[in-house]
Picture 1 (spheres, rainbow, N blue to C red):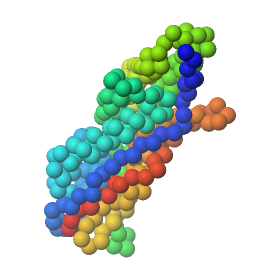
Picture 2 (cartoon, one colour; picture 1 turned 120 degrees about the vertical axis):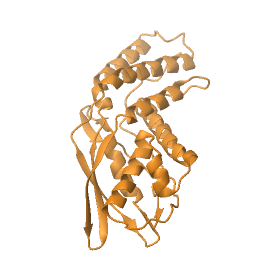
Picture 3 (cartoon, rainbow, N blue to C red; picture 1 turned 60 degrees about the horizontal axis):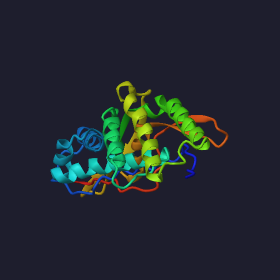
Picture 4 (cartoon, rainbow, N blue to C red; picture 1 turned 120 degrees about the horizontal axis):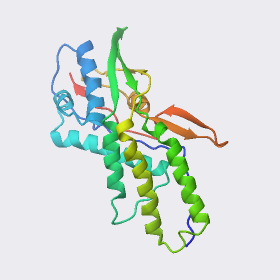
Length: 248
């Protein structure tokens, strides 16, 4: 059986969802309150730290867990798309990528570095230190894919069933990423400023602002059409529902 050649794509589709929830009444909104709110959004998505998010938004443990789990699943899917990995029914490929996503996000590094108020509007600046796992594994992944493609061309997989081939290919990618987990580092800080939207009843940040934060979390390698590579912070995301309004 002949198989299609594998390649790394430049497409990352990471969609993190923060469920819109109404929190309990809060008084004295200001720098500390808004800083805590933005911190809680990051912590619930990347660190599985739920307490602050639950206290601020009124979310239940189950709802906070769902936010975190959704993020892991979307990153797992994005990695599979980027590396040309296809899930196989009855295999644990997807579960292994979810576990990879959990390990990757455990290295997320960020801090609230400034909260300012201008003309009555608050903005919060977060300095994010992008995770570099996709950069440090890039050469190994390219070498692995080139080797697999050469073996396909040579006919080494002609007696394989498609599912067997997909599982072997996926496991190779998974192994490369898992082996790099202990060596994960973080890049130089990237400051991202988000605006607190306050309608007098709730406060929240926009989808676009949250996606700007998300894009800085993970540094990715992009393969250009001419074969050159370049780094970009995180991912192209078509849409998201990221508002987590908090009642005042």
